[in-house]
Image 1: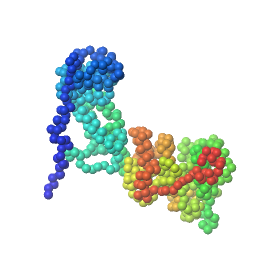
Image 2: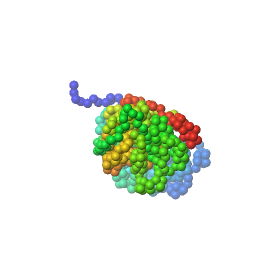
Image 3: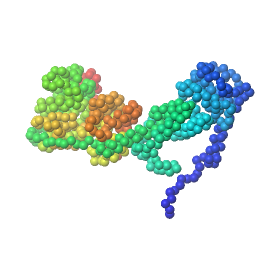
Image 4: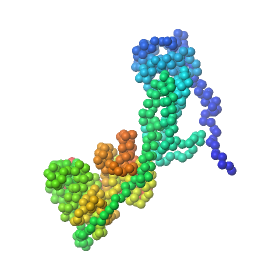
Length: 596
């Protein structure tokens, strides 16, 4: 046995090896023939009339009336058909390229081609599409008058030809040209000719190639405008391997930074809130309610209220972030629903100006309701959060440990239904005791950047035990002297279904607000990779199409996603028919108001 590496199969890709390659190449280079009285214009032809005259549409072209007796004329008519609406100068340029691709042509053909670019490059660059400009560059590679023209022309011909081959193959992958490949699942086999792979984080092959071509082209005054124009088009085109690799590089850098920073947010220091009032367990079941600050439409508020009334809430306190008379009017006759409009008079009575951040308004209102409450437990939920209990809520709260100031409900996040009722939700990996690595299996492109696989909070919400001194409500739990309260229990037989993004349209229409002022906003002192960074990047580089790709992979209720979640016990199935609850609780009045 030896350590000599095995060599690849020596079977040629082409019949007869390089001899076959050369034969096929030469077969395509037979010169174009001329009939009697046919010729190219002389080398000193006046370009003025050619630039001024426009090639007419095919049916109006007088040159089509004469019979076709040569391959030169046939090619001329093909080019004129393509150049209709452009100048006769552009048509002549195309015909010269066609001749110069062949093994022989009239003696002055190359000189006339060079004169066109030396004298009229602006005219050609303004009127020819990139495909014809690439053909012109190839012609410089074959027939350049200077060493620079031939060297740069040939190098860029190889570049564009290789691009055409691999982009044509890429189409069979099913990936759009502007969609980068996933970082996960990379093939680690050897490259052809034992080449080293391009180093995604720091490789310079791409910029070295493009930069060298740009610098070399600067040496030739005739070639420079054409070469620089094409290179500029190339680096601004979003459909190239250069753009895809740059996006992949940025994604990898963000993923690596996220992994290094352990993207799950570290827990803040906590304090213990003294618990004095605990109802006896053998007495009546504890009374509970929920508080919410909202600016949602009436129909959504009806669903929220009906759901918690169905579960047995003794009181629902609704703070209307913006006064909504139709909401106040609808609930006016319902004893269990208290509606408070947060108008100017409300904030004046509160003795403070209206906080600018909606999170602060939520916390203030919830605290105000907490301090006025005569219930035993008060939950602070949003109108898109719905408790899914497997036990009567009051009975579950009865068994919260006596030393606990609050009981936490862990969230499950809605998979946006494509039809029918909401029925599938997902857990975080931590809730099932799985390692963080499963997120990349479930969400191949984005799992490394998601906290728990969610796009909403993973902390859950709490039922706070009432009558505790000096505590305040935060968004996700009680706070005491500015710190999170740590003496809390769990409600393992309850889940909080968070319908954070019920559809792509719902998600898309709110993403900008959530990035700047809402739940996706990242603290300024947080250097770790967060969801907001991912969404910012997707929007900047891929726009709405990229946002849709993100949503479909992470949020849409699809069979493949459900299968991946189920394999890790992270799928929850429970139908949530909120409109049926509205009809049961509020009857025909709800339908009149537009809910169900």
